[in-house]
Amino acid sequence: MSVLIDIAAGNHSENAISPKVVSGRNIKITKHYRESSDASLYLGDCRDLLRQIPDSSAQLVVTSPPYNIGKEYESRLNLDEYVEQQAEIIKESYRVMSDEGSLCWQVGNYVNKGEIIPLDILLYPVFRDLGLKMRNRIVWHFEHGLHCTRRFSGRYEVIAWFTKTDDYIFDLDPVRVPQKYPGKKHFKGPRAGEYSCNPLGKNPSDFWSIPNVKHNHVEKTIHPCQFPVELVERLVLSMTESGGLVVDPFMGVGSAGVAAVRHGRRMAGAEIVESYHEIARNRLREVWNGELRTRPMGKEVYRPVSGRAVNGVRR
Image 1 (tube, rainbow, N blue to C red):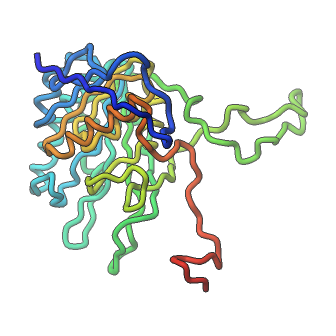
Image 2 (cartoon, one colour):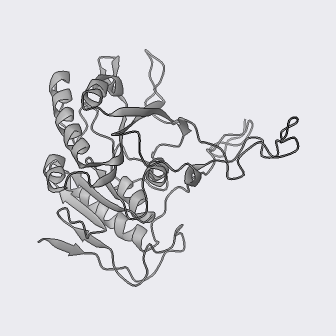
Image 3 (cartoon, rainbow, N blue to C red):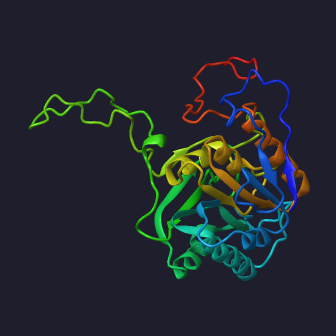
C-alpha cells in the first residue's frame, strides 16, 4: 500500500480562518483510495481512481470537468468523443454514489468559432439515461472573465445537481443566508405579530453570486480555471454528513477537497497534472492545520462606489 503521511508545519498563520480540523495528529493522505484516509489523492486518470472506490460509497460526487476548449490539461475532442468520454466517467461516478447521495456536475459552455453550446444541456441525456433525478440547475454568477465583442460576455456557469433516489441527504440550515427583511412579521391571522421568516436565515436559492478565482483572489494558484472553495462548501455542507466521502474526479488544485476536509468529511480526487496534484496536497495539509486562507463563506461581493478612486485616480 502506498501511503503518504503529511507532516504538520511548525507555526500557524495569523491569517488562518478556521481552526485545525483534528488536533493531535497529522492528516493522512494516500496515493490510492483507502477508506481509512482523510484524503486519497490519485495522480492519473480519474477512471482509474473511480474503479478503486467501492459501490455506493460516496455521499457526494462534485467536479468541474474540462470544457473541451483546449486548456493545458485537456486534449480537444470532437463533441461526440467528448460526450462519450464524459459518459464513461459519469457512469462510474453514478456507481460510487450512495443511494442517498448527490452528483454535482459544474460546467460552462463549449465555444467553437463564437458559437456556444451549453455543456449541461449536451450532457443531460447521459444523466437521465442512468435514472438520475435533477434537483436543481444552480446558476453560478461571477463578474470576471473574457470580454467578448461579438456577443454578450459570459458571466455564469451551471451546477447540475442530481440524486439517485428521492431519499437523499439535504440540510438547508448550514447554508442559509441572511433574510432580506429579518424583522418581518405576520400581520393577520392566528400568527399575527410573530416573525414570518426563519430565524436561521433564508434559502440561498438556485442563483449564487460568488466571485471566481482570478488574479488577486486570496485562493489563486497556478490553475487557470480554479473552483472557489465557497462554491463547494455550500454543496458539501448541505448534501453530506460528517465523515461522509466526497469524490472529485477532476480534482485540479483540490478546492473540493479543501471544502470537504475543512468540514470533517473524507475526500478522494484524481488529477493528471503533477504540479496541480502537488498543490492540492499542500492545500489539504494547510487547511488541516488551520493555515489555508480562503474567501469566507457568505462574504458580500464587492460593489464599487460611484466616485471612489480606482488605481489612485479619482473621477
